[in-house]
Image: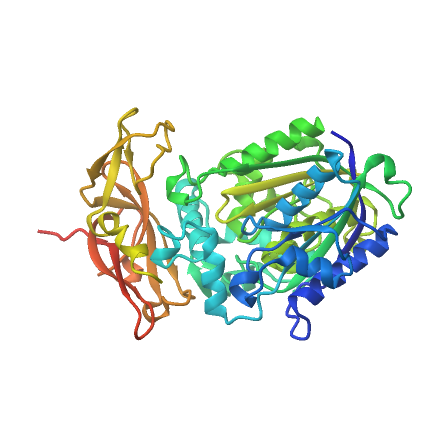
Length: 382
Length: 132
């Protein structure tokens, strides 16, 4: 396997893009990434997306985006793994280059959630659960997280307020990210007063669905110098799955896919959680952040909120989380999110994170699909 | 939606019919061809008793399309007495009265209507066990 580097990054602002369509957003991110990489020609395009068929009646996305981004003729395919679609696309792009089959690829995550009404989007998003035995019963993604959160609170004696620091931290960091959807800070009081989406999941536990696109250009390590920018190395790329339905898991409160993919990633990179300098995790809901920390070895079972309470998740803390706002404040453009995480890690490792710059030479990103049934973990190095 | 999509799950949804794995003996719900515990293919039909306890629950205030008529409603993971967990709506109970560990039993209820001229789909929900 060849060393793979990220040589270009691009992103649109995450948010409500009433004037831009799915294809426009994807093109914007791809062109920005290609420009950043000083690359004109790529061997393949991988598009991460979950809901274009359901929300905008558009499939065949690989070809559409290749066409509209001016990559005419190139090999192109859409990758779907629920919320982890973007990260899965990065993984496939990585495999294409690492294997030696492709030299330069572009990976784009894109989602357009505002073209459909909220109820339709909520229903479509819940297709990442078991459609016949979870979504069929009226479960939404916030409700899946609500089931996890209620049980987590019960089993480990945790209160709603103990999860607040994840959201407060994300908003604080998002305030300095020009591409974030929410750029305002929130207090614990605000967090506690937010209305309920799926009790005990409140408005401020949940990341907002939104539109957005992000892209990265990957190339073989030996070619990275020919292209522009400061290359960021992909030291590990790993993916794992768990039983799809939450009720089928051995222990619903342990994210086994997250654990497995992190374990594989640590082995590939030859590091452990102690060496990781910052972590972009899947904070679609506050409780998922706690569960990810536990699954990835940053905290013991039931102790995921402690790092947050002790102030260790801030930019100066032991393990900075959601350094550009995370899903909570940057926004969660579902199938694009996994690529945003990689773009933001690259910004950090290139020293281009502005006011949110973390001093680190190793960063990890983990994207979860559905209620944690898919996990994709990447470790990047400066 | 075509009708077969629903009638092929009739026994599961109306009768809570699952399986016992012939190889490892573990109860399986919902039924599937490959045992999730030991990965052997080969199960015997097994009807669950329909009694269990609330393992966790969440009250949904922003329902998906097709489910908004009943919001807010409470969904739960129910641990059946025989072992498996399943996911279902709770019914015949005030949302504020639900507790983890509450004994519940299966009933058949309307799950959703597929528009004015579409199907009315039924399935299992769970309610608090009636006190004698």
